[in-house]
Length: 94
Image 1 (cartoon, helix red, strand yellow):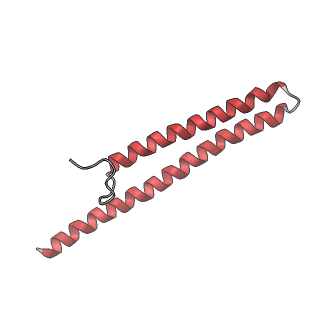
Image 2 (cartoon, helix red, strand yellow; image 1 turned 90 degrees about the vertical axis):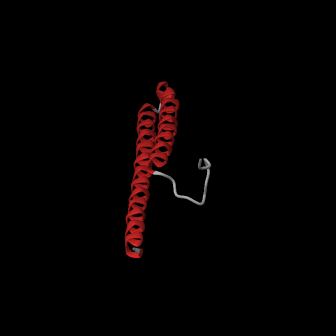
């Protein structure tokens, strides 16, 4: 059985998907908690500032999740290319 943190082998697509989902949930929770913390300032004089800041925090969370998704897609495509190249090299040796 392969070790959980093996740096000699690349992560499998399933492991990358799991890591992406876990990190996305934490980023979303952080953005939601930050927005809730800002919304608690609604009863102050800076009502519109609190609303805009809360929306900005949620937007920043979504932007980070999308950037993370993009990185994951780039990484997954690189893994697919490496797999195909490995198959070509094996076929060339025959």
